[in-house]
Every structure is written in structure tokens, then in C-alpha cells.
View 1 (cartoon, rainbow, N blue to C red):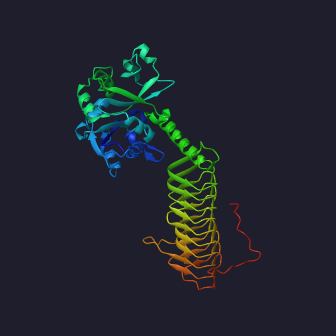
View 2: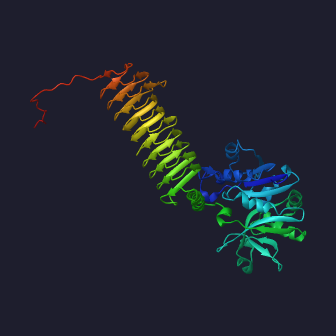
View 3: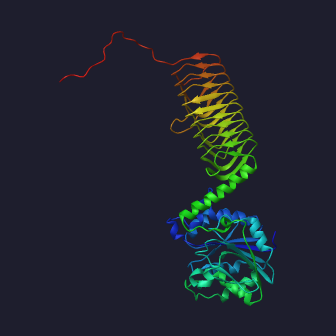
Length: 456
């Protein structure tokens, strides 16, 4: 998109106010580290190179970003933003440089594209934001012609400068030549004793380079994170964006403020999502799906016409459609539900295929198994799939009926149309259309007296 674009992401800070051993930029927003959000946005600009400036927790950042197409620059001592960018100077090409921040996760590609459009040999771009309360931010100083000519940090600002409400976001773009000319001229002669990248704005003005400003559509785009409260605020800002997008697509949300999407959520027509639901990874909900309150669905596809009742947890599952799940069901990875299959309350499944119309209604564990069509599994049934060293498979044929409180000791096959009596422990294969019962003989002693406590 932009010829010879270098993106420099500053991610060297400790984040002391987070009170955490984890580097600030690795704290997660919507299930992903903040710096990953920034990297994904930057990737949409198709940069030639992306550089991440690391310092505190450098090894953790290298490990976390090992799969990303980035180069690292190390800022061993945190001496300000100008000093941080200087660490990547030797790695830059000869085109445009965009400076971003690893703790500003909600910045949008469209905003950055507009900023980059200004940059050439006679112009640079600066992203500003106008705030009702500018406390803590550097202020944009403009001349009589309205041109941005300097940024003054709050600690260095005069009373009149403190009254300015247009603030610096720190995000800027310029040619590589401009940056290489200005960075060596930075001084730490200020209240913080740091090398401010913002000082290049005054240098640009003095060099006759026009500073072109852009503003984001929302202040949340450029809000940084310094503490847990700001982290929580940005999380909600992000989630309400997702909620609004879903509702624009026709999804019915019981309460947009009580939705968490930590990945991607794709929905068909007439989907309803109740309060407190969490969607992780890649989730697809088919047409007419209804998700009850407080469900967690991760990396799964729920087919059209299905209902997921409250407090169900679904992970790496494919439900073909017209399924009923829950309440309080747990579908673990490898679960496959055919059309109209049902998994009811307090049922756990793992690595199992449940055939069309089959039912596991309540209080059962079915793992490493395949159920045919129209199988009925009674309450309390367990597939005993693990012998302490290896997992074993259970096969249950079409139309089989498994009585309540049965234990199926794998490997075992239950034939088509077979019936297993309640309370049975099945360790051998059951023939098709046979009744199998393994049960101790019932004894009855009429008039038997229960022991009573002695007076002694």
C-alpha cells in the first residue's frame, strides 16, 4: 500500500503501574496481547519491514512474537521515546517510517492510512486527538496560521499551553531521511531528562517541513494502557465495537455490554446470544442458533437451528444443525454432533461422534466413542476409555439403548438395536438386537431389623 514502509512499534516499557511480572504490551485485550493487535493492524498497511523495540521483558517478547514477521531492536535503558526509535534507526529503509505503540491496541488501519497519505519530502504526519480532559498528555502548539509547530509535554507546559485541548497521541509518520536527520539532534534537557520523539515536530517546523495532522474517529483508538483500570476500559470499548458490528449484521444480543469475543465470531441470520457469553478463537453460529446465558464457545461451529442452553462449555466441536446442548454441558475437543443429536445437562463428551437423532440426555461421560443413529444413552453412563496408560474406543450401533448407570469398558462394541440393562458393567461386545444385563442378584430379607445404637 505504501512504498518502502517501515513500521516501528515501541514496546520496551515495563508498565510499573500494571503491577505484573508480564511486560505491559503482552497483557491481553480480547484474548490477544496488546502488541499483537498493533501488529495485525500494521500488517494491513503492507509494510516492507516491521520493527519492535524491546527492553523490559525482552526475552518474553521475543518468545511471544516468535511467529511474527518482525525484527527486534533493543532499548537496554529506557531514556524516552526518541531514544527508543533511535535503536531501530540502522534497520530502516529509505522510504516512510510509521511510529506506533505496543500499548495502544485499538488504533485502526484506516486512520493510519490517512496519516501516511500526507508524508513526502516536504510533509510529515502527526496523529492528534482533542480531549475534554487533556491532563497528562502533551499539547499541540500551533502558530498564528494554525500550523502545528511543536509539542509540549505537560510537565514542561506553561499555564496557557496547559489550556490547549488538542493532544499528542505519539503516533507519527515521516520519511526515513527526515527521521535520520532529526533524531541525532534530540536533547534530554527537559523535566524528565529523556529524549522526546515529540521534539521532532519543532525541528520539522524549523526545517520548513509542514506537519500535517489527522484525528481518529474515536478517542479510544489512541488511548494507551498504563494500569489495570485503563486495560478494563479498553476491553469494554473493543467489545462494544464488536457488539455493534454483530447487531448491524442482524444478531440479537440480550445485552451488548455483556458480551466477550476473543477471536472471530461469524453469525448467520436470526442468531440470539444471551448475557455473559464468551467466544474464543474462531466460532461460527449458523442461522437461527440460540445461545443461552453464560456459555463459553471456543473454536467451534454450531449448525443452523441449534440451541445451546445456559452455562455450557464447548471447545473444538462441530454441531451439524438442529442440535440441543445443555444446560451445563461440556463438549471437549473432537466432539462431532450429527443433525438433531442432543447432549443434555451435566454431560461431558470428548473425541466422540454422536449420530443423527442420538441422545445423551444427562449426567454422563462419553469419550473416545462413536454413536450411530437414534442411540439413547441413559443417565450416569460412562465410557471407561482409559486404562491408566492408553485410550480405547467404544462403538455403539444404530438404535442401541444404554440403560442408566452403565459402564462401558473400552474397547467394546455395542451392536445395532442392542439394549444394555441399567446398572450394567459391559466389558465384552454386545450382539445386535440383544439384551445384556450384568447385575448382582437382588436379595430381600422380610422383617429385617436395622441395628440400633447401644446404651452403653
